[in-house]
Image 1 (cartoon, rainbow, N blue to C red):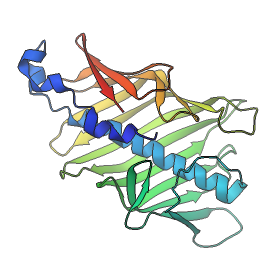
Image 2 (image 1 turned 30 degrees about the vertical axis):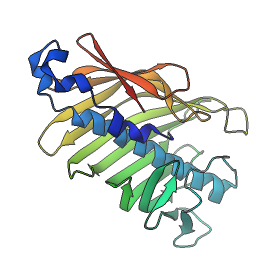
Image 3 (image 1 turned 60 degrees about the horizontal axis):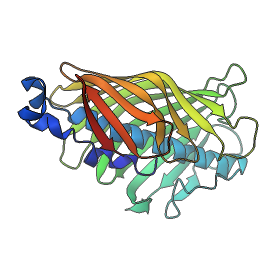
Image 4 (image 1 turned 180 degrees about the vertical axis):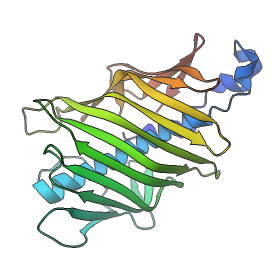
Length: 269
C-alpha cells in the first residue's frame, strides 16, 4: 500500500473535535486516536508482509515481482547461510531507507519454515529496532499457508504488537485475519493477482486504556496492481466509537469513509 501509511496524518475525523459537528456531545470528547493508529498499523503490517513476499520471490524462488517492495537502498542477507529450511533473512534499512516517500530504518528478520506457497509453511516477520516514518514498530507477524483446496489461503497473526508514534503515544495491537487469493491463481504473473481479507479481528489499545476492535464484515479486496484496498468494510467497536470503515466499491483510489450515527467522515489514504 504505497500511500496508505499517510492515513495517520489525514484520517482525523475532524468533526469529532467540535460539538457543533456531531449528533451527540459525547462524540466531541471521544479519543479517536486508536482508530487513526489502527489504520497506520495495518498499513505497516501489509507493507512488511509484502517485503517478506519480495524476499521469498527473489531469494527462494527467483521469481520477480516487478515492484520494489524492500527498496533499492535496503540490503538482504541470509543469516545463517544454509541450503535447508528454516531459512532466515535480514532486510536492513540502515539509518534510513526511503521508498515511495516512506522512510524505514532498522531491520526486519524474516524466517521461512518452507516455501510460503506450500500448505503448512510459515513466514515469520519480526521487527528489530524498526521505525517507519519516525514511528517505532515492534511485534511479530506469522503468515501461515492454510490452503486446503484450489484457492490459496493464509492466516496472518500479529502478536506483541507495539506502535509508538512520533508524539510518544503507545498502542498495543494484536489480531488474526484470513487472506485468500481470489484471482491470478492459474498464471505465473503477479500483476493479475487479487487478495481478499475475508475474516478476522484486530484490537488496538492505547496506553490510557482507550481500546477499539476492528472486525471484517465485508472482505477487504487488494489487487496486486493497485497500491490500495479498493473494496470492503470493517466494523469499529469501542465504548463510544461504534461505526464502520468502508473502502469503496472496487475503484483503485486512495479514498474511504468512516460512518457513525449516520455521519459520514471521508478520509484519504
